[in-house]
Figure 1 (cartoon, rainbow, N blue to C red):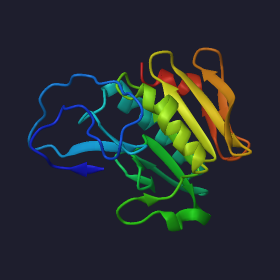
Figure 2 (cartoon, rainbow, N blue to C red):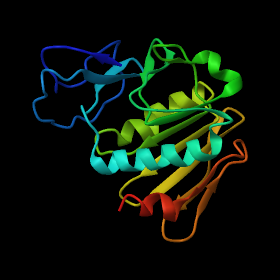
Figure 3 (cartoon, one colour):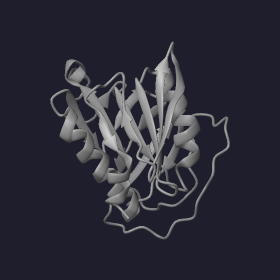
Figure 4 (cartoon, one colour):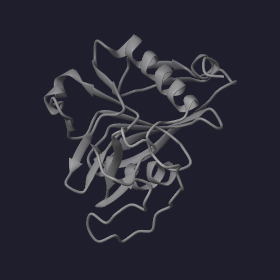
Length: 201
């Protein structure tokens, strides 16, 4: 989500009553001409960094290219910033999503309204807790078929698949050992981890 406001960098403001603690990371003063980015997670607002790190963006680019090269005929692959609206308490900006063609009605001119089929998040110090816990919980609740968490520090990808309404860790893939990420749900996916992470080093 995006908006302009006079000051950025404050702790997440309460959208509804906050029931969970959060981590706050100090950030430098923003450029007043840059639109602010934030997410609503379980009714709480969390400000996002105006721009991710270069490594983060390199990994996002390689993942997009890998998915688009083999899955463009199966669905639409989009990358952040794009709003994914799950309900009034949860509106996220995942790093990458894929929506199968038969479900493209959830893609509107402004945002995605509903759960994508595949969601990918790339960890950063300020978003790690949300990506691993809060957002994962909501993606599970709303029926995301697969959820991947990419770790730019250890060059790994954890692949969670939805089984009977719950995310199950299907596989942890790593670079340097010849791993290839595939999916039983999305047979078009074929990502060589050595090639993916080798391109960003």
